[in-house]
Length: 174
Length: 100
Length: 342
Image 1 (cartoon, rainbow over the protein chains, first blue to last red):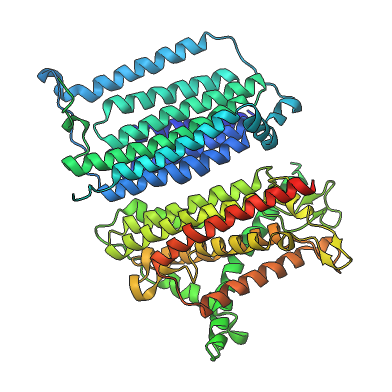
Image 2 (cartoon, rainbow over the protein chains, first blue to last red):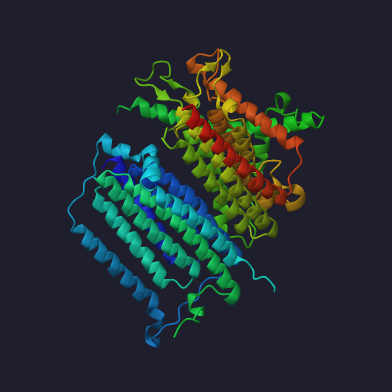
């Protein structure tokens, strides 16, 4: 088994286990830390896919900024451990999580089955395909072909920043 | 050898886990975290297919998805803070004003 | 079993760099106490070893023998993991910094290896990414200690680090524009040569404002004076590492000094020409690297014991209202110059 295949399986297992931990964990602080681990594993997968720029932006933006935001909110609100959900049918009440887990297993199984019926898609191994990752190429495409989307996202971020400050602000006494 | 199918299956599994999280968890912050898992699964698909087709567009879309996810997380968390101030709880079942 | 000499060389390089970082942290402890002493008109440690040179090792032994405390209501897992995260982030950032030219280790290797652990083509961003991971060690330390001083110190410290990361990135972006590449080795190689026979083509001469922004942001990132309000003894006992003792505290200490070394090393690679310098042959060029890093570290220590501390709101105001606009203007001016001069 060559090194990149081993690395893929390690990162994939880490990502899946960490995501399961995020979903299954009761303590929200641990959920956030497990999600950061999952992001790190995904960054490793991006490096394997010859996308080092995406990998570092994943760490900088997701693991370094968004997750810090989540962490601050969890610390600020001192989030209590959650109570179980109120159920529609009294007989099914204690089994809500188990039924939900079974249903999501079915969802996952269906998707895997559908994807297994696709023809094998081998990656290009030659150097020309690998040079797709150069930051200069990304920059060129981003600023020429996708320039409008780029400018629109900057306005989006501005709006989100102002919106977040306004929404989370304590109401002014009138 | 790792093929495109491996990556697609992995991101399908991650997406399923994220969906499970959104539906099963009764805590607003964990639901937001599960949405982030789903967005990451989609990012992985984009990058994998972009690598398969030999273009750089996959990574560019990923860049935009990350930016939008950042904006959405910021506003979502601001809403969570505002909601928490109202009801002192983070369970989505406490906010039933728009229900029938 | 034939062992590939390249792999052995790389592993040896990793061992050398790791040990150099740990030794440089020890050296920094000694340097700090000596410089502090001479600035304060006294002598400093002079009993252990020649001029107190073995004092850091005495300190380490003392720290190791202390009792490992843990507050009762602390979250054990996070409490123990936080210093590990800090230390790992500090060491990992050094993996892309070049400290010498390619060398064949006196002919032992077939192919030359560059004197750095790895050369990614997005090296500058890797450093930035790992610096943003360093925030977690502090935040988790403050939260898991379950104590007022720790939490306040941690929140202030992480808010400060995040704010100054922006100016850090802007200073980096200006240098990247000048060099046209994100790889640190390329940036250093672009600085080779001289103007008019004696002024080296370092970026500090092309980017003096950028250097200022980078150094200020770097000092703020590493929580050193005059930006060390989160650790201020007068206000917050010891900030986020109040409840830590023995090995965990030593890890935080180590992480802080290694972070300083990393900031200094990145500053030399970006602005001071890395390992380039006159008079020395190529295979000794790493000596120039060490000299430049030492100069910046001395400057760091000098600043700590000379300047008074910023108050927290002054600190944040400076970061957002002054340093960030200066960084943006520097970036715009650099962009204009690069376009105009081709």
